[in-house]
Length: 101
Image 1 (cartoon, rainbow, N blue to C red):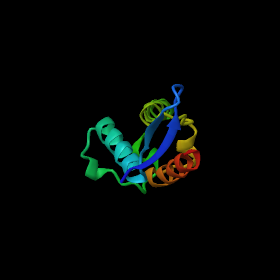
Image 2: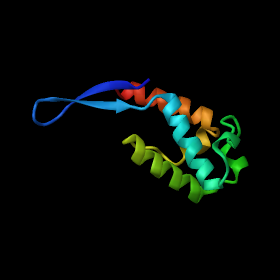
Image 3: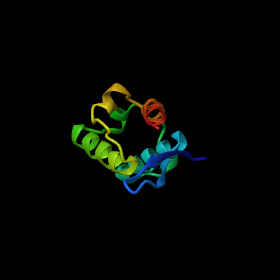
């Protein structure tokens, strides 16, 4: 299920902007890590800290940059340290996106 918000554009019409659900954000991050680590996405545990997957700061910056592009909103690379698991990061991002809508 996708949550939608309405955004007025400059021509005074209303455009619909889709906001990814927590499940969609989680699926994106799991898929990203699985591809990066060359493992099956079923092997990614959302409760295991990012550092246990061997992610260094350059990977964190790359992941958050790509996530930022996908979400269409700013994602600070330090969020991976503040929210060290996929589960906690998804919960944070989902709450932030809902608050902005």
